[in-house]
Length: 254
Image (cartoon, rainbow, N blue to C red; front, side, top):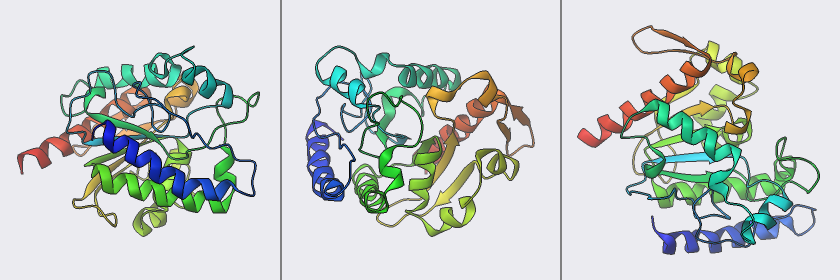
């Protein structure tokens, strides 16, 4: 993946998603630049990105209209925001060479924006509109085919729900389930999944959205590894990502 690939993805995004906003108040993130940070407004790369990018990190959307405008006009940088900083700290704790910010592609499930004054969190407008949901699923499929990741990390519920629409297997496992319920059932990780258009099986991991990584939310996380060791709170998310790194290492050797 390089900046030419990103430009091509943005063109396809506009073709697929813009028509879905014609009769709705959804604001599409149409303008962009080559700054590091989350696609589609930023490049999708980290500073000092080091291909191949084996992991797709998928958030919700790029934020609200004010954040979008401030970013495009150079008043802020996405990599200095709460979401990026919290995710960067988490990856630092994982401490595995197969899973660093430098070898991830950072994108969003929805290419729309929260309205100004409504806050940066909550359900993005596009996730309430079936036409836009369908367009977003199609464009996510385009991104998966282009990137061919070995791992997909869903950052929050909206990313998880949209990815499930790309796989009947995931939809069956995750339908109407909370993250707490998925943790209890050991379904916060799905290995060796096949998704249409992808040349290799993948591992899927579910995390809290980085902007919601606080004590209350983290206190609910649980994970039992393949050896039966139990982890709670922040340690659960660290170990979930270490399992992702192990999967990538195994595929690298094969």
